[in-house]
Image (cartoon, rainbow, N blue to C red; front, side, top):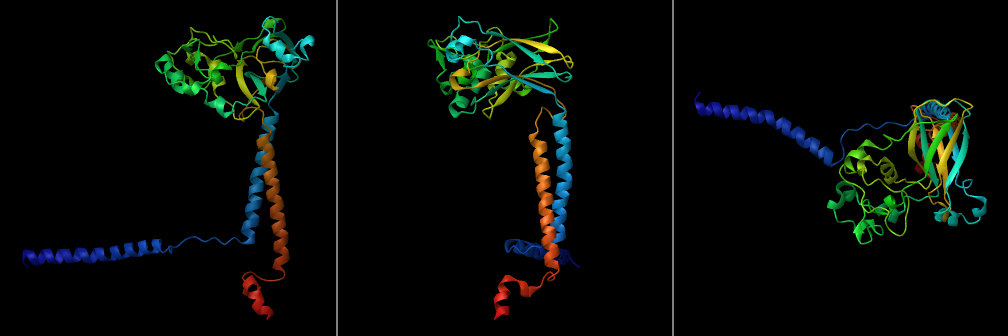
Length: 351
């Protein structure tokens, strides 16, 4: 056999081997295009449906009770102080009280600890009827300016708090301008309770959204002061109160972390809170509350998740029982797959 005959025979054998592969591939493509590929078609028999609902309820209800128990184990104390910290002569006109800088804003609250609270104890301030999710409010900021400072001039989104006395404001915008500025001091048994104000903001915000070399400039120097002031010698990445406040809330009632008490509070202790009632929520009918809370693996106190686990699990049990009763009633009258009982055959049977 010469070389040409050998090459011809080799090529013929390769083509003969590839022909079945090509035909198989063409058949698969054709089946895919015609949507005739083999598929799993589960039959939802009553046993499967009823069993699935029972299985969901078996998982959901115990999970709900465990979650609810974990939430109830968290000790939480909420104290509303905005109304009680207004002098009697200004009860009728609270807005005049909060706007008059000559009137002292100091106030003292006594909070009794009913149940032992293990450290760390988180301190939050809660604001109600405060819409941080308002579109104009949310847009009134400049993320690039927060990161680059005066090196970035495109701050038109910060209006109406873009400039003050003809000079740029850092940080600009309504969110920073309305910074919460109530302050709290805590005493127990005549001694001061230390509150850790560090590490209350997200690390990602500190490192990636607020510049390490960006300092407040011309902030709160206008005729209308919105909220708290900032230390001009501390970079924005270290101003954790500002960073916490700038992460806007989605709901009109929200809490923001103020600090942490890193010592236990025993049952029966009385914590004296000396606060400065500076923040104006009276103009729009808001509320201010001080919150003490412990935490566990679930986080803070929240009965919503556990309650709805139990509700959904109970609904699944109810549906499963209804299906079971229907199944028992129907199975006594006919068998499955009885074609004369199909809706399109009933007319022909009656005729």
